[in-house]
Length: 260
Image (cartoon, rainbow, N blue to C red; front, side, top):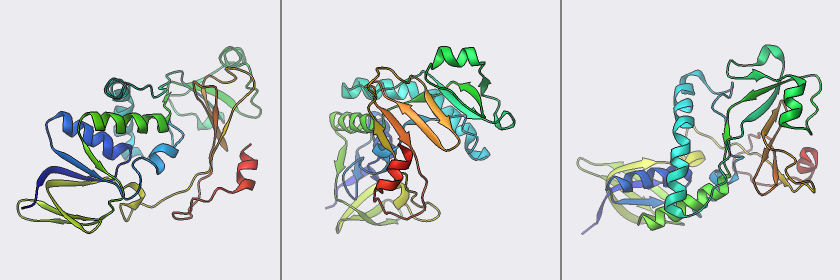
Protein backbone atom coordinates (compact mmCIF):
# COMPACT_ATOMS: atom_id res chain seq x y z
CA UNK A 1 0.00 0.00 0.00
CA UNK A 2 1.28 3.46 -0.95
CA UNK A 3 2.35 5.90 1.73
CA UNK A 4 0.40 9.14 1.36
CA UNK A 5 2.42 12.27 2.11
CA UNK A 6 0.70 15.46 3.17
CA UNK A 7 2.66 17.46 0.59
CA UNK A 8 5.05 16.56 -2.22
CA UNK A 9 7.18 19.43 -3.52
CA UNK A 10 8.91 19.23 -6.89
CA UNK A 11 12.16 21.20 -6.75
CA UNK A 12 14.72 21.49 -3.95
CA UNK A 13 15.87 25.03 -4.58
CA UNK A 14 15.50 27.76 -1.97
CA UNK A 15 11.77 28.15 -2.67
CA UNK A 16 10.97 24.45 -2.47
CA UNK A 17 13.07 23.84 0.65
CA UNK A 18 11.78 26.99 2.40
CA UNK A 19 8.20 25.97 1.69
CA UNK A 20 8.93 22.46 2.98
CA UNK A 21 10.35 23.89 6.21
CA UNK A 22 7.32 26.11 6.77
CA UNK A 23 4.93 23.22 6.16
CA UNK A 24 6.94 20.90 8.38
CA UNK A 25 6.85 23.41 11.21
CA UNK A 26 3.05 23.37 10.87
CA UNK A 27 3.00 19.59 11.28
CA UNK A 28 2.90 18.42 7.66
CA UNK A 29 4.67 15.31 6.40
CA UNK A 30 6.68 16.65 3.43
CA UNK A 31 8.64 15.05 0.62
CA UNK A 32 10.86 17.18 -1.64
CA UNK A 33 11.98 15.78 -5.00
CA UNK A 34 14.95 17.21 -6.89
CA UNK A 35 15.97 16.34 -10.44
CA UNK A 36 19.68 16.89 -9.68
CA UNK A 37 21.50 17.94 -6.53
CA UNK A 38 19.46 20.06 -4.09
CA UNK A 39 20.16 23.78 -4.36
CA UNK A 40 22.77 23.52 -7.12
CA UNK A 41 20.94 25.46 -9.83
CA UNK A 42 19.95 29.14 -9.75
CA UNK A 43 19.33 29.15 -5.97
CA UNK A 44 23.04 29.03 -5.19
CA UNK A 45 24.18 30.93 -8.29
CA UNK A 46 22.31 34.19 -7.74
CA UNK A 47 23.97 37.41 -6.61
CA UNK A 48 21.86 37.69 -3.46
CA UNK A 49 20.58 41.25 -3.88
CA UNK A 50 17.21 41.66 -2.18
CA UNK A 51 16.14 44.47 -4.49
CA UNK A 52 12.65 45.32 -3.29
CA UNK A 53 12.72 48.70 -5.06
CA UNK A 54 13.96 47.42 -8.42
CA UNK A 55 12.18 49.58 -11.05
CA UNK A 56 12.12 46.60 -13.44
CA UNK A 57 9.80 44.62 -11.14
CA UNK A 58 6.37 44.33 -12.83
CA UNK A 59 3.82 46.56 -11.04
CA UNK A 60 1.55 43.62 -10.23
CA UNK A 61 4.37 41.94 -8.27
CA UNK A 62 5.61 44.96 -6.30
CA UNK A 63 3.35 44.50 -3.22
CA UNK A 64 4.51 40.88 -2.96
CA UNK A 65 8.17 41.90 -3.35
CA UNK A 66 7.89 44.60 -0.67
CA UNK A 67 6.19 42.22 1.76
CA UNK A 68 8.86 39.58 1.07
CA UNK A 69 11.58 42.10 1.88
CA UNK A 70 9.85 43.02 5.16
CA UNK A 71 9.67 39.43 6.40
CA UNK A 72 13.07 38.31 5.08
CA UNK A 73 15.07 39.25 8.22
CA UNK A 74 12.83 37.00 10.35
CA UNK A 75 13.14 34.23 7.75
CA UNK A 76 16.94 34.49 7.93
CA UNK A 77 16.87 34.43 11.73
CA UNK A 78 14.83 31.21 11.71
CA UNK A 79 17.06 29.52 9.11
CA UNK A 80 20.21 30.47 11.02
CA UNK A 81 18.75 29.28 14.34
CA UNK A 82 17.59 25.96 12.88
CA UNK A 83 20.80 25.27 10.97
CA UNK A 84 23.37 26.78 13.34
CA UNK A 85 24.91 28.55 10.33
CA UNK A 86 25.45 32.17 9.31
CA UNK A 87 24.21 33.12 5.83
CA UNK A 88 25.99 36.50 5.61
CA UNK A 89 22.81 38.58 5.71
CA UNK A 90 23.87 42.21 5.28
CA UNK A 91 21.69 45.31 5.82
CA UNK A 92 24.06 48.06 4.71
CA UNK A 93 21.93 49.29 1.79
CA UNK A 94 22.69 49.86 -1.87
CA UNK A 95 24.14 52.66 -3.94
CA UNK A 96 22.71 53.03 -7.46
CA UNK A 97 24.03 55.16 -10.30
CA UNK A 98 21.14 56.53 -12.35
CA UNK A 99 20.16 59.47 -14.48
CA UNK A 100 18.13 62.00 -12.48
CA UNK A 101 14.97 61.26 -14.45
CA UNK A 102 15.22 57.48 -13.81
CA UNK A 103 15.31 57.55 -10.00
CA UNK A 104 12.27 55.83 -8.39
CA UNK A 105 10.74 57.31 -5.19
CA UNK A 106 12.62 54.96 -2.82
CA UNK A 107 15.98 56.29 -4.05
CA UNK A 108 17.56 59.13 -2.05
CA UNK A 109 20.05 61.25 -3.95
CA UNK A 110 23.50 61.46 -2.37
CA UNK A 111 25.67 64.54 -2.36
CA UNK A 112 29.31 64.00 -3.37
CA UNK A 113 30.30 64.36 0.29
CA UNK A 114 27.75 61.74 1.42
CA UNK A 115 28.96 59.32 -1.25
CA UNK A 116 32.58 59.73 -0.16
CA UNK A 117 31.62 59.02 3.45
CA UNK A 118 29.79 55.85 2.43
CA UNK A 119 32.26 54.55 -0.18
CA UNK A 120 35.58 56.32 -0.59
CA UNK A 121 36.54 54.20 -3.61
CA UNK A 122 33.53 55.08 -5.78
CA UNK A 123 33.96 57.90 -8.27
CA UNK A 124 30.90 57.96 -10.54
CA UNK A 125 30.97 59.84 -13.84
CA UNK A 126 27.98 61.02 -15.87
CA UNK A 127 25.48 59.62 -13.34
CA UNK A 128 24.01 60.69 -10.02
CA UNK A 129 24.40 58.45 -6.97
CA UNK A 130 21.35 57.34 -4.98
CA UNK A 131 21.02 55.41 -1.72
CA UNK A 132 18.29 52.89 -1.06
CA UNK A 133 17.75 50.66 1.94
CA UNK A 134 18.16 47.16 0.56
CA UNK A 135 19.65 43.99 2.01
CA UNK A 136 21.79 41.21 0.57
CA UNK A 137 22.54 37.60 1.41
CA UNK A 138 25.02 34.97 0.25
CA UNK A 139 22.74 32.62 -1.73
CA UNK A 140 25.08 29.65 -1.48
CA UNK A 141 25.29 29.91 2.31
CA UNK A 142 21.53 30.44 2.53
CA UNK A 143 20.90 27.31 0.47
CA UNK A 144 23.31 25.24 2.56
CA UNK A 145 21.65 26.48 5.76
CA UNK A 146 18.15 25.78 4.46
CA UNK A 147 19.09 22.20 3.56
CA UNK A 148 20.70 21.67 6.95
CA UNK A 149 17.62 23.07 8.67
CA UNK A 150 15.40 20.79 6.58
CA UNK A 151 17.47 17.78 7.59
CA UNK A 152 17.16 18.68 11.27
CA UNK A 153 13.42 19.15 10.84
CA UNK A 154 13.18 15.67 9.29
CA UNK A 155 12.06 16.88 5.88
CA UNK A 156 12.69 14.13 3.32
CA UNK A 157 14.72 15.64 0.44
CA UNK A 158 15.55 13.24 -2.39
CA UNK A 159 18.14 14.02 -5.06
CA UNK A 160 18.19 12.67 -8.63
CA UNK A 161 14.44 12.16 -8.49
CA UNK A 162 13.08 14.10 -11.47
CA UNK A 163 9.31 14.53 -11.37
CA UNK A 164 7.88 13.10 -14.56
CA UNK A 165 4.18 13.43 -13.84
CA UNK A 166 1.70 15.05 -11.46
CA UNK A 167 -1.92 13.99 -11.77
CA UNK A 168 -4.80 15.09 -9.58
CA UNK A 169 -7.27 12.45 -8.40
CA UNK A 170 -10.46 12.83 -6.40
CA UNK A 171 -8.79 12.56 -2.99
CA UNK A 172 -5.07 12.84 -3.69
CA UNK A 173 -2.32 13.68 -6.18
CA UNK A 174 -0.32 11.00 -7.93
CA UNK A 175 3.32 11.85 -8.64
CA UNK A 176 5.82 9.84 -10.65
CA UNK A 177 9.50 10.59 -9.97
CA UNK A 178 12.38 8.55 -11.33
CA UNK A 179 9.89 5.93 -12.39
CA UNK A 180 8.55 5.56 -8.83
CA UNK A 181 4.85 6.20 -8.15
CA UNK A 182 4.18 8.43 -5.12
CA UNK A 183 1.05 9.83 -3.53
CA UNK A 184 0.22 13.01 -1.60
CA UNK A 185 -2.79 14.98 -0.49
CA UNK A 186 -1.36 17.99 -2.33
CA UNK A 187 1.61 18.71 -4.60
CA UNK A 188 3.49 21.91 -5.42
CA UNK A 189 5.63 22.69 -8.47
CA UNK A 190 8.75 24.62 -7.36
CA UNK A 191 10.92 23.60 -10.33
CA UNK A 192 11.87 27.13 -11.38
CA UNK A 193 13.09 27.20 -14.96
CA UNK A 194 12.00 23.57 -15.34
CA UNK A 195 8.39 24.39 -14.40
CA UNK A 196 7.29 24.79 -18.00
CA UNK A 197 5.72 27.61 -19.99
CA UNK A 198 5.60 30.56 -19.47
CA UNK A 199 8.70 30.17 -17.24
CA UNK A 200 12.00 29.91 -19.09
CA UNK A 201 15.69 29.85 -18.12
CA UNK A 202 18.01 32.85 -18.45
CA UNK A 203 21.76 32.55 -18.10
CA UNK A 204 23.92 34.98 -16.13
CA UNK A 205 27.73 34.92 -16.00
CA UNK A 206 29.42 36.41 -12.91
CA UNK A 207 32.77 36.32 -11.17
CA UNK A 208 34.21 36.80 -7.70
CA UNK A 209 37.10 39.16 -6.95
CA UNK A 210 39.29 39.03 -3.85
CA UNK A 211 40.65 42.58 -3.36
CA UNK A 212 44.02 43.05 -1.70
CA UNK A 213 42.52 45.93 0.31
CA UNK A 214 40.26 44.94 3.20
CA UNK A 215 36.70 46.30 3.17
CA UNK A 216 37.13 47.91 -0.22
CA UNK A 217 33.35 47.98 -0.65
CA UNK A 218 30.61 47.92 2.00
CA UNK A 219 27.40 48.62 0.09
CA UNK A 220 25.89 46.84 -2.87
CA UNK A 221 26.67 48.95 -5.94
CA UNK A 222 24.48 49.06 -9.05
CA UNK A 223 25.24 50.81 -12.32
CA UNK A 224 23.51 50.53 -15.71
CA UNK A 225 25.76 47.72 -16.98
CA UNK A 226 27.19 46.10 -13.85
CA UNK A 227 26.59 45.43 -10.18
CA UNK A 228 28.96 44.70 -7.29
CA UNK A 229 27.90 42.72 -4.23
CA UNK A 230 30.34 42.62 -1.30
CA UNK A 231 30.53 39.67 1.08
CA UNK A 232 31.69 39.76 4.68
CA UNK A 233 34.63 37.55 3.66
CA UNK A 234 36.00 40.49 1.66
CA UNK A 235 35.12 38.98 -1.71
CA UNK A 236 33.18 41.06 -4.23
CA UNK A 237 30.78 39.48 -6.70
CA UNK A 238 30.66 41.16 -10.13
CA UNK A 239 27.72 40.57 -12.44
CA UNK A 240 26.09 39.84 -14.64
CA UNK A 241 25.08 38.98 -18.14
CA UNK A 242 21.49 38.15 -19.03
CA UNK A 243 21.35 35.62 -21.86
CA UNK A 244 18.48 33.74 -23.47
CA UNK A 245 20.41 30.57 -24.31
CA UNK A 246 18.23 27.92 -22.71
CA UNK A 247 20.01 25.66 -20.20
CA UNK A 248 23.50 26.34 -21.57
CA UNK A 249 25.77 26.86 -18.51
CA UNK A 250 29.02 27.42 -20.41
CA UNK A 251 31.30 30.01 -18.81
CA UNK A 252 32.94 32.09 -21.55
CA UNK A 253 36.43 33.49 -20.77
CA UNK A 254 35.90 36.59 -22.92
CA UNK A 255 32.71 37.44 -21.02
CA UNK A 256 34.42 37.04 -17.66
CA UNK A 257 37.33 39.17 -18.87
CA UNK A 258 34.87 41.90 -19.89
CA UNK A 259 33.22 41.84 -16.45
CA UNK A 260 36.65 42.05 -14.80
